[in-house]
Image (cartoon, rainbow, N blue to C red):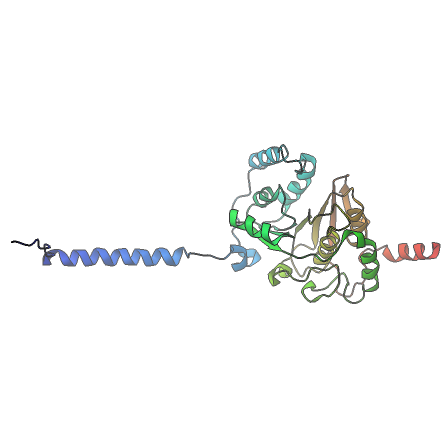
Length: 297
């Protein structure tokens, strides 16, 4: 009975086979070096001036994005008149623009797209939703923060912050080492090292006495703007839902009425300048206002 035998490799073809295999392995090695499996975010690897400065987003694309975002069926979406001022500032921001957003909302992907070629970072109160959103959109950088404040305490928190304004709650400081109740100090270190050009406060929840409210993001944004080390000395800060008491009171207290550029019931636009590290007043007229209020009482 005969058995089937495998045909031997012809010796003449062996060099050709090895040469082809070698070329394949070299190509594979080159691809792996050029395309790592888990590359870190580009803005973490490169300095501010080294990020690609390709052409800005065309005006027609921006207008289209605004058109469809403002006509969403979502009940909580922003209107065109709310989105447009933020978009205008992002368009004028020098590239690459640093954009910090408090809150994951209907407009999250819009903000990421409008800040073309820039770095956009989102802060949200819900760690599970933040992780879920990053899984769906790995190109978006989201960090979660655990707020300890409550809406019902917003007046007491202002009073305690005024008492600590020369110490833990001063307007110019590194919040990473702060113990001020209104300061966010548990974000990744690099978030505090960035000179943010634009900040949007559209979170966390502020719809009830037990909700965390936006006291902490407003205070934190005011400190980040005044503590900038370089870049543009001015920071554009937008506060959404400005018709509510907390947003108005804390905006006046820590972003300051003299810095208010424009406002309507839904959106306020402040431009806050960096300050000297020995400054101990958030607003230039705060001393006189406090003195008059105490004398009247």
